[in-house]
Structures are given as C-alpha cells and as structure tokens.
Length: 116
Image (tube, rainbow, N blue to C red):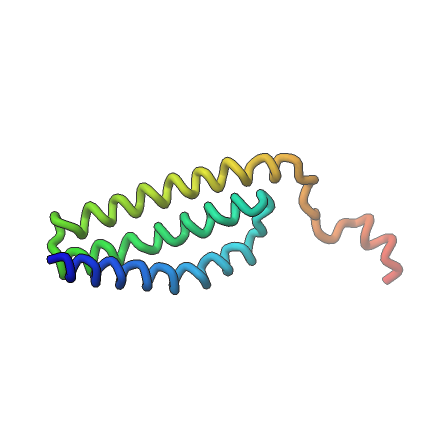
C-alpha cells in the first residue's frame, strides 16, 4: 500500500509541477504581478495546487480508491489552492490600489498632437 501511495503522489506532483510552469508564466504575461516576490510565490503555489485537483481525483481514485485517497486529496488540493490565491490577493491588492490609472488608449488629444 505504501508503494502505491508514493507512486501516486509522485505522479500527481510531477504532473502538477510541469503543468503549472507554463500556466503560471502565461498568467503573469497576461496580467503582471506587482505585489512582489511573496505575491509571485503564492500565485505559483495556488496554480500548482489547483492543477493537482484533477490528477489527484483521477489517479488517486484509480490506484487507491476514491474514498480512501482520490476525493480527500482533490478537496485538500482545492482548499490549499484557495488559501494560496487569497494570500496572493492580500499581497497584490495594495500594489494595485496605489497604481495610477491604466492607459486609456488612443484619445482625441493624442490624435491632435501626433502630427499625423
């Protein structure tokens, strides 16, 4: 039983780590993280835990049984993800509140002063 448990955990963690790297990078490219290194860490951990939910439910249920490992592990990963993303929001919110207003795009004033 212990060997199956370790193999299951290894499969789940390896999948989540390799899947979370491009997902986290794409998320940071789409919306820049301004809350510092702690915000980046909690963002990555939240993505990692969220991506563990599906493999935990599937692999854990197939190998060890749904009630023995699959469902409890998936729910635990989801709760960890929620906590990490809430902590990310705690560190990110103050930096976004102090940020100046976003660029409004091309305005009439820009058109008049551009010389085109």
